[in-house]
Image 1 (cartoon, rainbow, N blue to C red):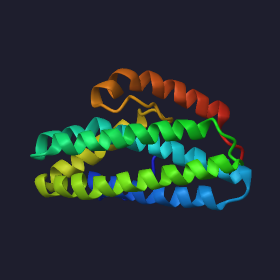
Image 2 (cartoon, helix red, strand yellow):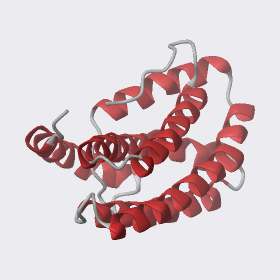
Image 3 (cartoon, rainbow, N blue to C red):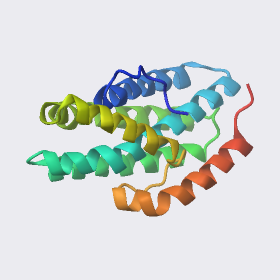
Image 4 (tube, rainbow, N blue to C red):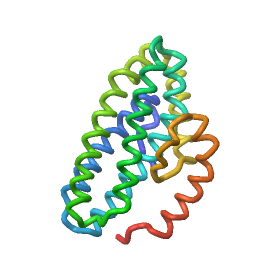
Amino acid sequence: MATTIDSTTDAIDFLIHQHDRIRQLFIETADTSDPVERESKFFELRRLLAVHETAEEEIIHPRARRELGDGGAIVDARLEEENKAKKQLAELESLSISSMEFQVKLAKLREAVLAHADHEEREEFNRLRAELDDETLQRLRRTVELAETMAPTRPHPGVESATANVLVGPFAAMMDRAKDMIGKPKQ
């Protein structure tokens, strides 16, 4: 489920708050030695990463392409990072949550995702905030939230464009949510 954020924040604040939650979930996932708790934290992390990236790919990146002079180059770089991270996340799903390999790959994913979030915040989000008025940013927030409710909850490498998300996303989301219900960690 998406992280609940104060309704007065705009799309940029909403996404930055999610970045903060993702940072925290990486720490919580890595720091626990209890396999049940680690599985639960990883489940939440994977889900948040998937819905968050889908919303960015469908809503924020296309807007950045249009609004920012060098938006195409910025977005292309972010999409490449997202594809690599999705592949890393998909690899993690196949590993035992208790294995050392999981811990090592989780640390590598964390490093890549945090660098990606930093790039987005500096190169894309800050510039979009400067280009768009408050009302537009508020509308974008609602659109991002809606996109997250319909987004896949697992990584799908190769599905990084808005068009690909619209074509593949609904089916992938339905399948992911069914898998989530069947494989949800016990608490």
